[in-house]
Image (cartoon, rainbow, N blue to C red; front, side, top):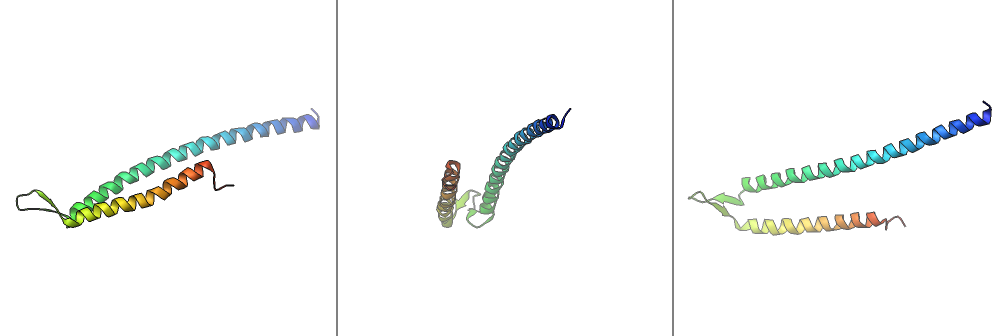
Length: 107
């Protein structure tokens, strides 16, 4: 086997290894994205549960003498403010994600 053939074989082997590593990297990225989505969903569930627990442990919701729940006036303000802040935060995040998907910022 001469030197040129050895270099060709080595180049071919390295090329195959590079393709395998690239494919493994793509699969790892897909797995990482899936884990990010799962963690984000679980976090949202825990945050929602935490919010509900906080509201019910505060003085925004109380019980009347007949053991029925009574909603304080501030609870409606809390609901409106929370909804407005959620929209205010999520809208730019969704816009950023949409623009990033189109790669507008890369030009």
